[in-house]
Amino acid sequence: MNSLRTRLLTLVLGLVAVVWAGAAFLTWQDARRELDTLLDAHLAQAATLLVAQFSHELDELELEYGHPPNKYEHRVAFQVWGRDGRRLLFRSVNAPRTPLGSAHTGFNTVRVDGADWRVFSTHASSEDGEDDERLLIHVAEPLNVRTGLAASISTNLLYPLWLTLPLLGLLLWWAVSVSLRPLTVLARAVSQRRPDNLSPLPAQQLAELAPLTQRLNQLFARIERLIDNERRFTADAAHELRTPIAAIQAQLQVAQGAAGSLQRNHALQQALDGCRRATHLIGQLLTLARLESQSGMALERCDLTILAAGVVAECAPDALQQGVELALVADGPFLLEGWPVLLQVLVRNLLDNALRHAEGASLVEVCISPDQGQGGMLSVCDNGRGVVAAEREKLGQRFYRPADTRSDGSGLGLSIVQRIAERHQAALTLESGTGGTGLCVVLRFAGCPLPESVPKCGV
Image (tube, rainbow, N blue to C red; front, top):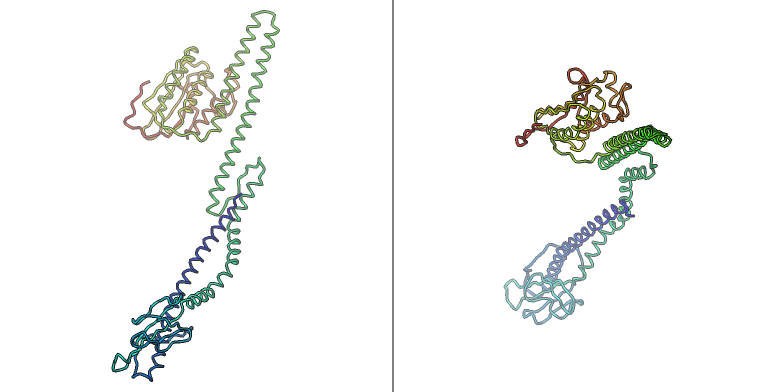
């Protein structure tokens, strides 16, 4: 398994090595350049001394090229040639017999007898400038001497750095380990957790770890919420399905032991009604479970008026069968950011509740009142018997049904509506219905500006 510490140390030490090698190369180049300058001056000085040595044989010799004295001393070879440059008058023991340079004065680098030399050439002349009094002097130094000296100086300069590299590696390892310690502690805290431990991690002070910790805590909270929802769904389903399933079983047993067809058919009809109620309950439970588990759906800009009109058209046959007038009153398009499928579920549950529980109602009215740029309101009202004020606060609770209700609902409709309203940041209130009677469920949304291109909808 790759280690972040190993990778970081390798990268840092590699960069240090590259920089160190570059510094060593630059040190070598600088040392060689300085040595060349200084040793060239030494060659010129040596030539001056040679001219002075031969001055007793010539009249007041003068040097055509001069340099300041030099403190370096090396093995130097020299040659003294006559005016024609073909007759070797004098040479040092380490100088070859082959000329070390030409008749031109100054510095030059030549290769003689397989060796490279750095040569300084000059003329010595008498004061009267007679040609037969001029000498050609070559002072030379082997280049390998300079190379060895540059290597020695560079080695002496860089040797302490070589010795400190292991210490630098240890210090870097310590620094990286200390810097990564919070990450190590965090990794250990996560890896050693039990699967059922979803408590938040401690807040991190480091800017690099704080977002990671926050995201992990959000993930833990989301997982815990999903697990709680699953447990709640299981408990609710087990609790609420027990009664209808027991009733269905009892009716089927009655039908099985019925003496006549009339009693048998009645028991079977009751069993079918129980199956229908159980199916409705399961559908409501699944809807509620999906609402509580889904959080990544993309928002869409939708028209609540058009969505409500479609749901009203779906519920119209049931309303007609119950003798209830179903009406939609809309002032125009109502645009908002939301989830169209959930908004349809919201309107459908409101209408289903109104048709199921509005005892004595003859009218169920869906009103949509958009306020351009400022949101709007959706209300579903009936003129039935209504619900007393003390009971209204409990209607949003799961499985709660007023004690005097005669309907066969599951008590989840308003819970679903409330959950969808929260997802859309809408405020839900329960008020008196049409004409001061019945019940009116009011939802207030924050809407979107209405563009001129959206056509008006008449329903």
